[in-house]
Image 1 (cartoon, helix red, strand yellow):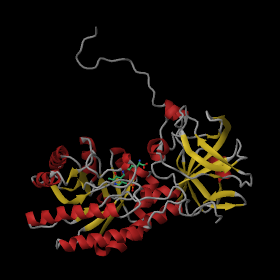
Image 2 (cartoon, rainbow, N blue to C red):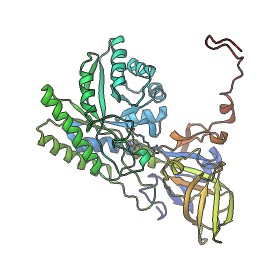
Image 3 (spheres, rainbow, N blue to C red):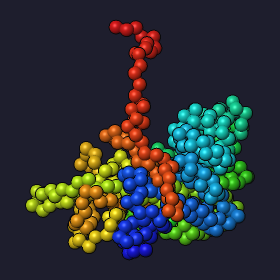
Image 4 (tube, rainbow, N blue to C red):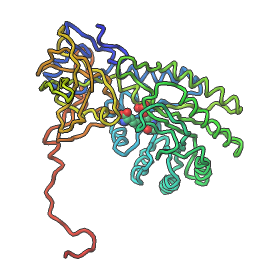
Amino acid sequence: MSQDLNPVIWPMSARRVNGEITIGYISVSDLADEFETPAFILDELDFKARASLWAKALQEAFGTNAGTAYYAAKSFISTQVARWIEQAGLGLDVCTDGELAVAIAANFPAKKIELHGNNKSESEIAAAIDYGVGVIVIDSLQEIDRVARIAHEKSVTQGVLLRLNPGVDADTHEAISTGHEDVKFGFSIASGAAWDAILSVKKHDSLELRGLHAHIGSQIFTPDSFELSASRLISVLAKYRDEFGAELAELDLGGGYAIAYIEGDKPIPAQEILSVIATRVKSECEKVRLKIPRISIEPGRVIVGPSMVTIYRVGTTKEVTLEDGSTRWYVSVDGGMSDNIRPALYEAQYSISLANRSSSAPLRKSRVVGKHCETGDIIIRDVQLPSDITPGDLLAVPATGAYGRSMASNYNHMARPPVICVLNGRARSIIRRETHRDLLALEIEEEPRQIGKGEAK
Ligand code: LLP
C-alpha cells in the first residue's frame, strides 16, 4: 500500500494502483462511471472483519462474563448490514421504529435486539414487544409505566435494562457527550434518580429488570471514562444486592469507541481497550464482592466508520482573495453537507485524497466544499492538495461510514447518495441513489378536509 493511504484511516482493501485508488480491487473511476458520484463505497470484507473483531474482543476480554456486542444501528443500517451483523454473531441496538423495521425486514433474531431511545412512542414500544425484542432500555419514569402497561396488556414479561447517567464527562465534542449530568439521557446516579427508577421497575410484574446500562458519548479515545462509568454502575449493582439480596446479571457499557479520521488520531485497538475496561470491571466487582455481571457493549462507529469511503467529483475550483490580501483555494465537489453533516455539526475533521490519479504538482492549501447554498458547507476546512486538481477529478474521503449516510439529508433537494458494496472486483448497490422521482413522490395533492369540530369562518 502506498504511503498516502494510512491503513488506520482507510478500509482494508484500499490501495493506490498506477496512481489511482482502488477499493475492493475496483478503481474509483470505474465505480464513479458505473454508479456516479457522490457515492459511499463500502468495503464488505472490512465491515465484516470489524464486526467480528469487536464480537471476539468482547469474548476475549470478559470470557464467560461476555454478554452481547450490539451493533448501533444509528451509525448505519440496511437489511444487508443487519444480516452481516447477525452472521458475525452480534446483536442489534435500534432506537426508533424505523431502525426496528429494518431489523424486522432482515429477519434479525428478536432476542438479540435491544430497543433504545429517550422518548419511545407507545407504538414503538408495542412494535418492539410484538416482535419479541430481548431487551428494552428504559430511560424515564413515565416509560417504566408505559412499557409495563403495554407488556401487561400483551401478557408478556419484558426484559429491561435501566439507562443510568453515571455523571462522567467524556472527552469528546459537547454534542455527542451523553454521560454528564446536564443531558436528557438516563437516570442520574448522583441525584438518586437511578435508585428511584429501580424501585419503580420492581413494582411491575410485567417487567424483568435484567441490569443496568450507560452510554457516555461517542468518539472517545481513552478507556478512563468507560472505566469510571463502569465503576459507578457497579456501585449501584452492589447497592441493589445489599438491598434485595439478589444480583442483577447484566451490565451494558454502551458504545462510543473512537476511530481515526485524520493523521495522528490513535484509537486504541478493540482488544486493548476492552481488556483495560475488563480489568477495571473485575477489580471493582472484587471490591464490593459482586459476581461479575454479563458485560455488553454497543459499538457503532468502530465497525462501520472506517469501512466506507465517499467519492466525489470536482466541479469547480476558485481562488478567493481574503481581506488581508492572501488567497484561499476553493475546490467544490458534487456533494457536501447533505451527505456529510459532521463537519458543520461537530467541527469534525476528515482526510481527503486525489483519487483518480496521482499528481506530482506542488501542494496547495485548499478548502474542499460542497455544492450547497451555505458558507458552512465545508467538507475539509484546510488541506494540502495537489495544485493541479481540476474539474472532473475524483476526491475520496475515508472513514465516512458512521453517521454519514445515516445522517444524510435532502437539503437543497439533493438526492441522497447510494451505498455501493465492493468485494473482490465486484460491486453492487445496497442502497440505491435517490432520484428526483423519489423526492417528488412525497408530494400529494389533497382536497382540504374538515379537521376537528371547529366551524369554518
Ligand atoms: N449506544 C447508544 C445508546 C448510543 O446512543 C450510541 C450513539 C451508540 C451506542 C453508538 O455509539 P458509537 O459507538 O457509534 O460512537 N452523530 C454523532 C454520533 C452520535 C452518537 C449517538 N449515539 C456523530 O456523528 O459523531
